[in-house]
Length: 623
Image (cartoon, rainbow, N blue to C red; front, side, top):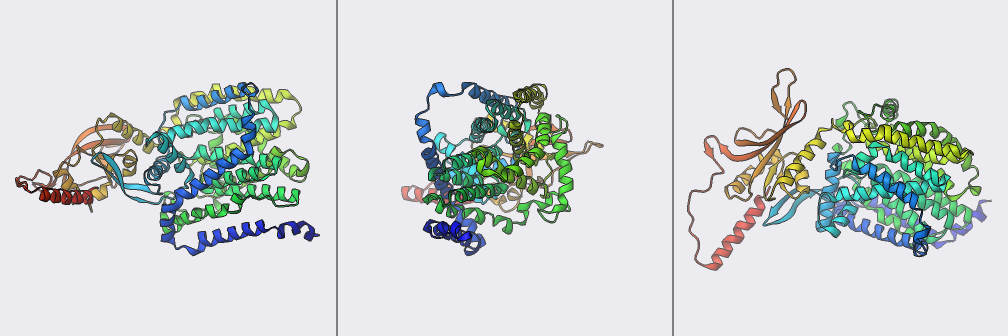
């Protein structure tokens, strides 16, 4: 009985080309290229892989939507829904200050976008300096974070010039796009009011506002999940090559937003196979046949986790020996409940979203099981939602098995956003089961009340973010940068990437007092920088008031410092910026100007030779 069904697929040469493409991608991504060569390969070609995939995605979007866009008339637009989306996005953006919220992730992404912009390589700069007015990246390292967000930020740099704030502009735009997609999802599932309900639920989520005004990839992840689900519904409806290409390349780009986003390839594959089964033939386009080859950089970049044991960050949770295990689940579930139903001062949650989502989730699961038995008679959006429900479930289970999967942790709670997206989708999907339209109006009123009564005050106070000292210190440093009239200064700071990403020359403490101490002496003697500053953090003993330098911040007694600015950003810490006045060797000042008056050569050729030699040495000495 299988032969008649399989015959059209077995005889289709395009299927064999797709399988060949998959096999070749597996060999290149997992077997053929050695570890260190893989990192170099991704560094040099990663930007171009993403660029090709993005260009094909945009082309496919136009092919499947272009006709409808050309016939669109202003009078046919639902301006009330546009207003709801605009209002919801504005609420999310106005109550939080723009800044880097989760510093390590967001600064690393910004640094990668900087290298993509300047020389189209995938590197996070670790050495960079101002050379005669031009900022140059001198050295970098491959980061473990996927490439799609820094790629989009680099395109914004290309169009408007490099600015760290471009990360905030990108996320602001993605906020409105996300709410628009949520509105479309609700509308397709349960009508116009359901679209507004989805927007209201997310507009009342302080965690979304926290990320919307940051520089991370969480908003892009949400946008791509919803967009891929909607494009899946489009493919189920049209069942043609342009819709398939847009759907598959949206999934390909989604897989390159966050580490775990590759999970969403599962519901995408199930959707495509379902359509093929229903059609009795393979719907394939040339871009999709070769799409696997555009993903080979993904597993190659993932080799970082094999090369650097620290990439899993197991040391951040003492006692954790493996990244994923079932014994983490009970503890992670308790932390998830603390986040979903915690106090507004401690957790950026929405009680309305949490309550409705937890109530709707089991009914949604039963509804999906019921619908999977009768997909042939369901609407395209319902079928797409049913398949993507599997993705939401797998993603949640994976995070519950993660050693650092505590949703109430200040760094980790952003990982709950896809789960909360699944909750909202569950509410919208279950809503049509209630025949009474008053239920939808009542839920919309409840969401609006929760937004005004709890969420807006919570976002305005943002007390839940005050315990994260690295974010506050980064904002404090950025204030210092903004007040400087000149940019030709050097900073010694263990978080040197933050300064370099803002085009300020910087080097970490261990380099300044160790391998590059002589270089620093040379640069200070020759007045290569207008100033040299040092950032340090002091920990304060609650009982004695004694201040102790944070580990790794001590330059030693030979570095003579003068305090420029200091502030207690938290009760028991003091953040300080100092000016480095000189470097000494006992009583001798190593950075004093050379007292010897050197004769200037009369021959112009000799002068040029001396200048070139000095410049070459100067570049070698840069921090």
